[in-house]
Image (cartoon, rainbow, N blue to C red; front, side):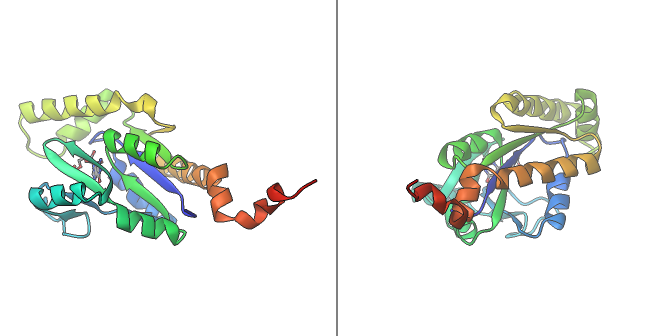
Length: 205
Ligand code: 5GP
């Protein structure tokens, strides 16, 4: 497959969505996968833009028909990445970014050895807590649950190839751009994308 696959994982409150959005504006060859989910849309979310919102029954049918390259249950909802869309994009030579949780990132690492996994950390636990607090008028209990969930995700950080600390946004965007470039330059990806440069490997000497 000629395109490159990058997964980005972060606890909620690490600022991953803004980071990825800004990078996509900069990098026209990078496509973001729109996942399938069984969770209900939040205010302002549109079907087909943030997610493909589906009923649980439909999701499970798709899962059982092997239509997801990875899937996971996160906070009581199912999430999955479309196999057909992903392989189509990669075969056309586009680089694809997946915003998925640690369970999905683990599956993608196994299925696509040329892929690169990135974890985004908040600059500190205090900062994470205040970002979670500033999200709205949630109860103390909800905030505490979110913080525990975030810590649960962060405990998987050592499974990832790259870590970006999202303190100052413009620095983090530059760093993510560098990781994407490095992913493109991996031997496996270069060899698939530009086989003509590697034809000498098959020659006798
Ligand atoms: P949210 O519902 O807040 O948008 O996302 C909740 C979590 O699900 C986030 O950690 C997000 O990265 C993860 N997620 C979103 N789409 C997928 C997906 O297709 N697969 C997996 N494994 N996780 C996903």
